[in-house]
Image (spheres, rainbow, N blue to C red):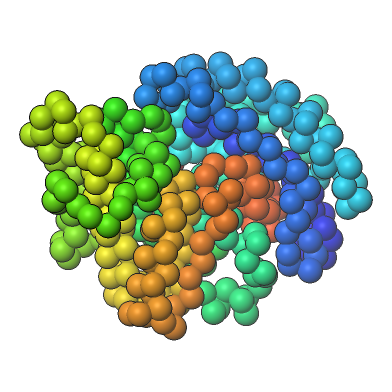
Amino acid sequence: MNKSKDLTILAIETSCDDTAISIIKAKANGFFEILANLVSSQIDLHRQYGGVYPFLAKREHQKNLPIVYKKALAVAKKKKNFKKIDLIAVTAGPGLEPCLWTGINFAQDLAKKENLPLIPVNHIEAHILINFIGQNLKPTKSELKKLLPAVCLVVSGGHTQLILMKDIGSYKIIGETRDDAAGECFDKAARILGLDYPGGPIIAAKAITLDAKNKYNIRLPRPMISSKDYDFSFSGLKTAVLYEFKSRSTRDRKTKKYIQEMAKEIQAAIVEVLIKKTIKAAKDYNAKAIILGGGVTANKELRKQLTEKIKKEIPKVKYLIPEPKYSTDNAAMTGLTAYFSWLKKKKTWKKIEANANLRID
């Protein structure tokens, strides 16, 4: 296995409530091909609790992993380019520790059985590097030179971070949330409004259906939007949503119009803060690119407004954002990241520890 040959990677991702397995081919020409990319979601199971229960998620991973593995292998074997698995990748953190351990144990058993190299992957780095799939990008020195340094916004249910990317494998966190992550804020705000889980997609859907006329004139705060640093704080926004909701009559709270206006303002507040901080960081660090990753980046309003802002204020800066199906947790991003790690270190790990708080820097 060397740089001149294709490399087929089996990747496993169980950092939260999605059981994901992917088989990707890293090609000698610098591009990547997805041979299989399966995700078994637990949303319906956790919806009744309004959030993810780690040990319930762990149990489901244990049940689903063998099934998803067999299905992924069957899908890959139907492709002409599939020959054999060359190495195995697994998410080691950050995430929910019981869930991480389930994926790690499965990967270690499989690597031992098949006598294959095993590579641990940082989940946050994977959210960044997934941008090399579907963007017609080669991770060559000449291509990277056009993109680096880059400012990366990784935003999900558990993380909201601004990361300075100097090279693949070289990162520095320049800003992060001091309390709730943006996705977590969406979930908690949705719960206050009596909406379903997960909150982000539901709030986005409600906001889209709102007509142009505002009846309730709701205005929520934009926490830390004018601070000189690149940090975030969404706990205060969640509290403001609660106070605004409680200030209304029982009748108003239940009206379709009120819920729509609240949804629009919640989304607007979160999106505005994310964009302001990202643009500021890109300017301050003379970034050549802005790279997005994480489940919240599937939000259409965030994508639309950030695209417009970049074109208006920093048009020379490149903008990379994954397809929505690769924004949320998947194993293709795990396999892709393992490939870069393998190229650099050519090292296999016999023992991998789950690290719920694993940092990227």
